[in-house]
Amino acid sequence: MTASSTEALTRYHAIRDALDAFHHKAEAALPVALACRLGCSACCSREIHVFEVEAAAIRAELGDSAIAESSSARTACPMLDAAGGCRIYAHRPLICRSHGLPVKFREERAASEARDICPLNEDVGIDPWTAPADAILNLDVLNAQLALVNRLYGGDGRRIPISQVVSRDVQL
Image 1 (cartoon, rainbow, N blue to C red):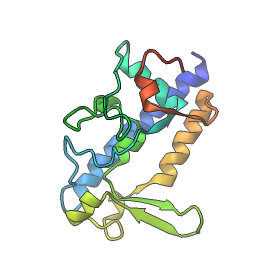
Image 2 (tube, helix red, strand yellow):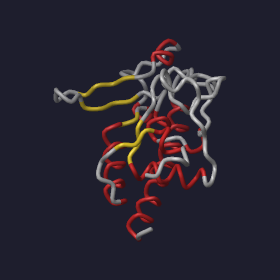
Image 3 (cartoon, one colour):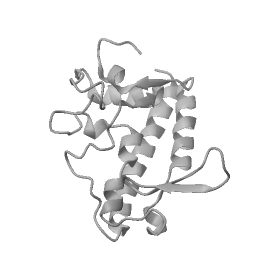
């Protein structure tokens, strides 16, 4: 591992830890509790893809463990167990860590800001347009940080399916 890839992994972990801290702070600032609970897998409707730096971090954290794909791989994230829990929850990617929170981002085709939230959290009364400012995650900033760290890692911008990241049969 090169010095730049080691530095990239350190920075990735810092971003991940900051996102987790933001999530806890945002939950405390929201007027009602998030609907997200163990077994809620509404966000996990398809397999996700991650940057190379994220794949390397997840693989390093899993160590020699290999996780076989679940039988629901065609309709949902292959990391879901039968009860709807994430089998790599402690090591889940940033996109998974951001789910549930009110988010803001720039519309690709417009100069305007967009906001969104999981419909289940909308149902409990959280509105991404009226939520406290310190509870709204800026996805543009998060994605820019992740892209820069991936570049530092030596990543070429390709994304890897999570099922390949956790399989020891696949060389990245």
